[in-house]
Image 1 (tube, one colour):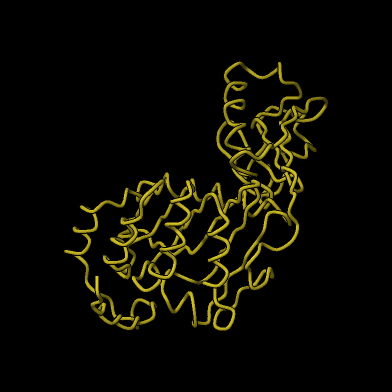
Image 2: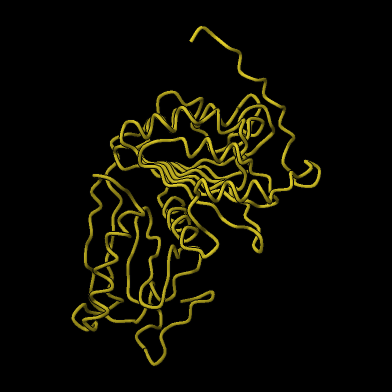
Length: 309
């Protein structure tokens, strides 16, 4: 492949092959035996070796490709959505073509302030967009470098509602610069249901992503990537830029983000977020100065007032 992915050696048929020569910007995933390439709104799953016919592949290569069809379908849609798969063979590189599922919905989701790509913060607060997206999701994946108590409190009811109606939540946060607050982590562990919490131990590798992935009931989805960590200021009145992509416009960004999230979870720095881990983190944590960490100073929340109960 071009731009860093060499063609298989001793394979004259690879010359001029649209799969072997696919530019890096279209490569969604690639390993020693297979590759996934953007194809318009869909994907192509192909072996690394240039082979024209399915029966010319070794039984082992056939098994590897067949086993990866499901995971590749999940890059386009999840749940009950149907992702058609077609085996293409002939004079060119044998591959599976995966077409995106039909989208019944074309209008903006109910409750969204707007469906433009840029969410700019302040009067266009990210929190106002997150609420309807979470409330209509069947699955949410969140990768964010910092968790602040103030931000977690804003989204916690919506995340618990997602879980209470049978949805799935995966959260990956980090201890980079000790900004993440132990109290915020404990709030996340209070969630009940199909929630999976992970932490990226950033002692050697800085961890600074901010991304939300949403999957809706019809199999479509949305992606938000930008500057907002999970703090009240970042979700409400702060000047933050976040770009949102619906896969009804283009499936490739969501497919790449889903693959990237899975790759993050597989990294050796990632471990389960447990009460024991939080206790150990709190014991060693040195509260950072906002001017050193880059995280805004969060105002101390007032203590809860007693009521009749």
